[in-house]
Amino acid sequence: METTNSQQETPTDSAQKKEESKLSKFWSVLTQAGIAERTLRIGTYLGAIILVTIVIFAVQAFSFGDHQTDTSSQAVFAAASSTSMPAPTEIPDSDVEMPIFDPTAFFTDDGLTRAALIHTSIPTRARVDVLTYTVEQGDSVFAIADLFGLKPETILWGNTSALNDNPHSLSPGQELNILPVDGTYHKWTEGESLANVADYYGVSIQSIIGWPGNHFDIYDFDAENPGIAANTMLIIPGGKREMINYGPPVISRSNPAIASTYGPGHCGAITQGAIGIGSFIWPTIERWISGYDYNPGANHPAIDIAGSLGNSVWSVDNGVIVYSGWSNYGYGNLVVVDHGNGWQSLYAHLNSISVGCGQSVYQGTPIGALGSTGNSSGPHLHFELIYLSQRVNPWNFLQ
Image (cartoon, rainbow, N blue to C red; front, top):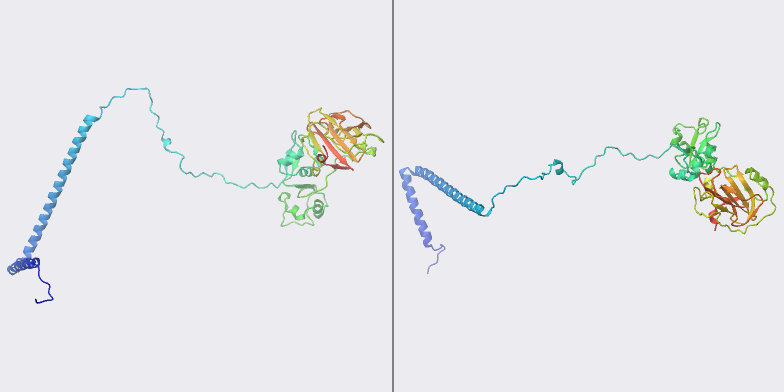
């Protein structure tokens, strides 16, 4: 069998070649006749017309089908409505009122809102000037100091002429200077040295000059020649000084002459009497403070024990009475007991006194009644304990 590089023809390929041969012959005849181009143009037109006609018939047929479907659906819906839906009923009139339409109900606060700031926030500035406070009934140096965030001694040092460092000198209606900061208040005297003033109060010159409330021009100020007018009040920030001792000297049975400085209740020479045992009971039934506690820094080396007017007051230990009567130092009715062992006890503002000069008393002996005489803002017992001429804290010794 002979082999060739060409592939063997199939019957299908042979038929296609015959058809192509016929079309070629037909196109050749038309070309020779000169009508080939016209025939192609006419055939193209006819084909386009036939295609458009087919599309039109197809669209009409589709629209007709949709119309039949809609008609059938409407018929089915009408039939269902006529059999299943009840006829509407008439609602009778009633007194029920329809709610009033409120268009604002559609606006709620559920969304995020931005607060309107109509004011500018300004930080609180520290006070730099002295202000005035009027003392009210029941006030104390401690309470006023707490009110303004100051130490009690600052209240005293700011009002030396009015209080003379005596916290019991307060009285309703008094006008007090309230410093803006803890320290002292100095009245300038002509010829003073600013350096000496600063040294006396234990501060620097710059702290005085630089305090805004003193109103100095720190850029044009001569510390050597300050030019401060006499009687000008200067704020001394952080300044301190010794307290004025407003109380009388300590009384004992060995120095009766000193007692005369207290007032008319002083006693004469006392050479004998009971001796204390060295322990101390509370001088009254109450054991809580009313007003002032022990605070030597605020010139109050005592405790003010609360109580009702007329409550009994008794001696804290054995001893002898070395003062009994009115005091000119603001104590009012006063009793002083010398215990003969270096100790003295003092009872002030008594409503009444039940002991006399030179009388021996014993621990628990009644000496008077609690009151509010002298410089006092209400009933209480001003009580002091003195050892070797020094006022000590009673809390450390009362039992």
